[in-house]
Length: 159
Image (tube, rainbow, N blue to C red):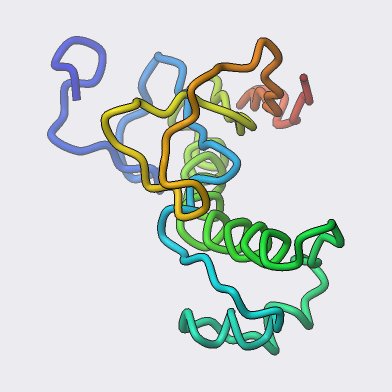
């Protein structure tokens, strides 16, 4: 809390607190969960998910996490586990953190985004694939976002 616009010690998002007249912005990076998964040399998606403590039957049965079919099956499996870890650890929480204040009139507007790429500092790299941080930045960054207005209660998509 900044003490100026948000002055309480906590901000209740369930409608039991005071509405505040500031915009809220929250988001995540597409592969935020990649650093919390591990790179496996196994070519069995089910085995890799199970080894990492996930319920492979539920995950693969949901048809939400399809294994890409590229030239390198272990990279493909890593991409799937990264996507699942991101959803489980970041995206679901972020979406609820957006849904709750919109549903309960906490903020006049809520901005939510997911960005495809970000910058990795060279001093620290969690990359299990290369062991090194990226040394270049792309000039094109994809961002998916929604603006949720309490008065209209509708989402506007943007790129």
